[in-house]
Image (cartoon, rainbow, N blue to C red; front, side):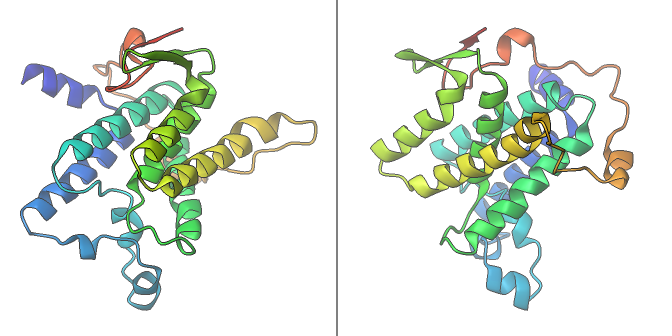
Length: 234
């Protein structure tokens, strides 16, 4: 329990809130306190019935307790934490802005695509951004093959195809992730480029607080890779 307690205490704030919300919704559905019908993405109900919470819950529900839930929640935790600890270690507001960007763009796409739950899209977006920002990290896939980090999202896509899953979800995550990466990392570095995604000052005031002195980020050796993918090497 001490290990679990330390892990929770050392998890950065946005990742903590997001993963806690995902677990809470799954527990609530499992105990019949909530129904998935109250959580899924429905533009008509959001607009006509002002059920705004669906913009959040549809990104935070990974389904009921099973192996897929465990795999997805651990993967979301892993890559959200790695991004927040490294690229956004002192810029929590920018990390929140990235999540909001994903929610907005994905919601616009989901209006035209019949996808009820968008949590896996957010996970794929996090994986894509992390993979592009760590181009020299090598990952071992199930102890079978080694790939460079930028190929990880495409490995996911290949597995979705082989398992007969909905590839559109992975593709949307890749598209949204690439759009964010281009606007945030590529376009501003061009000759006439500028930052398109700007974090409002009030968000910086709210979120960019000093970190707890007892906070310990994930060890460097443990950062690359994922729970099901093995370790990575620089």
